[in-house]
Image (cartoon, rainbow, N blue to C red; front, side, top):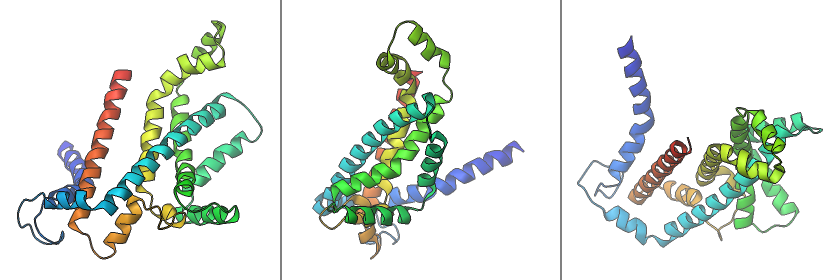
Length: 255
């Protein structure tokens, strides 16, 4: 029975990670076409990647956008989660429901609705519209992540802080926020990943003047997967691993 569970466990991981491992391997293939057979080890596609200025500009735009939207979504999500958890107000239940509605809504609906909004209020499509869109997508995930952490709080800690004379700002700074830090970090990483990964919503709310990496890759792979895409995907995967490792190190130090 244990052998079956062990085999099933590794089969699931093999199914999840084998395509990524294959992509990383073929990023070092010297073949002209990424779908061809292995022809030898080469770094020429990484050299070609760093020589592709359009792709690098799109990657830089995506990093700036993802960092900005993740930071703003995490700040707003932290404040919203604390308000929803600590205070009672009219419409609190509906606020929770609206968060889940946004999370469950298809990206195409959100993209079209935001496009109609931007056209109505006459905001030019570009960085600002992308930033608002990515914050809108990420905010519910950030709120739910932080609320899940708040649900495990001991409320007596906050009450003890007040009994010792701390005001709301001091209580948040010295008591609530340090305990929330792992959830805040997780919310930021999740928001960053959602922003870097979004294609459908971004497609509707930007134009050709501001290209981001997912849309650039989408336009390139329509004609076939090029070896530069494999190299870029491998680098993004390594960056993701580094971010996850850093988050785990921070969590262990925090504990």
